[in-house]
Length: 422
Image (cartoon, rainbow, N blue to C red; front, side):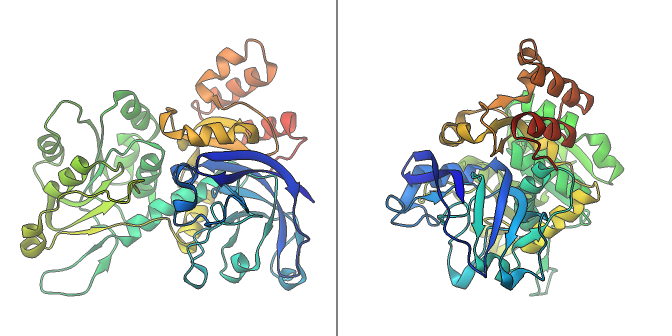
């Protein structure tokens, strides 16, 4: 079977290729990808090429398919898995396989599976590790966004605290405590806010900072202080541009030091700010993976010794985090649509990926069976003046608070991809 996919051929060399997939083996599964969302991790892999930890050294001879936040349908099942999976079943993939200690992952390392493609062959190890996850939601895009949500779920689970006189780590954030999220209104920050105010272990106070008022205003409208209060969380959005950020965050917390602080941008000054806010047994979580392998920042080791402050970091979630995210979505506790600001087709993936840090907004959602320039939801109204499809999409999104939704996805796929809707 032919597939069309965006493949990495070397540093900053992404191409839309059409090629034959190998014949599926008895322990593999053939699937149709419908949606993928573009991640900063894909940008890092693309610009670093073979120097990236997950990209094979021979990528120039054997290019790999990009994209690891994908959702689709199973269309053929090898005999080994015939009793476990069903034809037509929607799926998402936890791509952080850690198979036999390897960093190899779909969307970085594999020649025949990745999210920026029309059809893929899912290798045996994905099923062996129970990382091919059933998804029973209505919208493919929610299945795609389960992967980034699993990353924030995992990072919250990885944080820990220790009672005085005890050596046992109590995993998770300090329930009812004071939490800060620094540089936290980008797409992953929004996912973190959405998750932490709707999960089963919540802080009592949450302070979210950024230096762009428009992003803060959008976050406040989508994930409001009123909604957080309904869940028992006192949420404050804080613009720290041009002010003493530490003083402003302490004022927002009522003068209390912080139990948990997450840093969502690889900036040394922000790491040092987070460190300065930690109270006794405070946990600093460095969420944002830097591209620079020499990235470093100061850390107060006096407080490490005498106040028990500590630091953790995670790179992705695991299959349990992803199942939790999928379950919370199906229960209506998470709203992945708040992350999406742009849609596009497979043709726009190379340019979008390589320019991702410079494109404003949140998640860029790709529908792999269509060709469409990267298009902001905010531009639907203007485009609708000459294109009836965008006029219709604009009307639907406005009826959903300006957000992408299952109805908009269905209309787009019916019009552009021959009815491949959920």
